[in-house]
Length: 161
Image 1 (cartoon, rainbow, N blue to C red):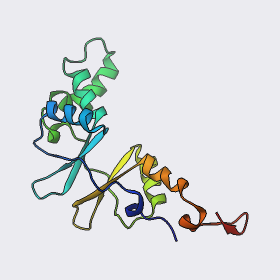
Image 2 (image 1 turned 180 degrees about the vertical axis):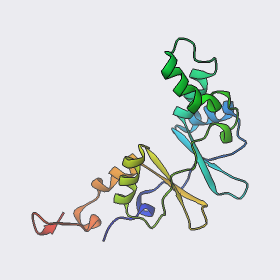
Image 3 (image 1 turned 30 degrees about the vertical axis):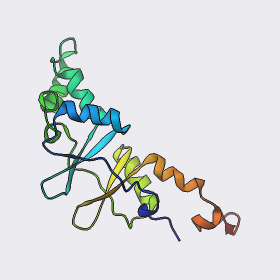
Image 4 (image 1 turned 60 degrees about the vertical axis):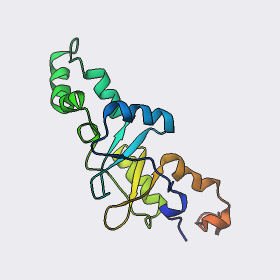
């Protein structure tokens, strides 16, 4: 039996609405000791994620691109210009959100995080509503479990591991 996302996810999630202002998000990240928030639309569906990196982009580039080489500055301008001017979660979030089902295997969450180069996944039900969040630390917590809890066979040893 493989461990499901629901077994290791955090179910009490700090989230923001798409209209949440920059300053409130920055304060809430610090107060709640989290590194990102899922962003919810008016129906409570996950539409994006605002991370410390997204907020840092605004802070770092709000004044422009002075001192950056031409080509690098041009690439950054196209990609990050909107975020630097953003003032709400909708402006600053990374979207669409990469999400996962609570029924998915933890190994699938690990693969998705690795391939997408992200450190957390909002966990959503079939309708896209937030049910939890799973982080890299949550994924790695599987290895803290006993061999019986994990229920995996080690093919090299022919026994439970």
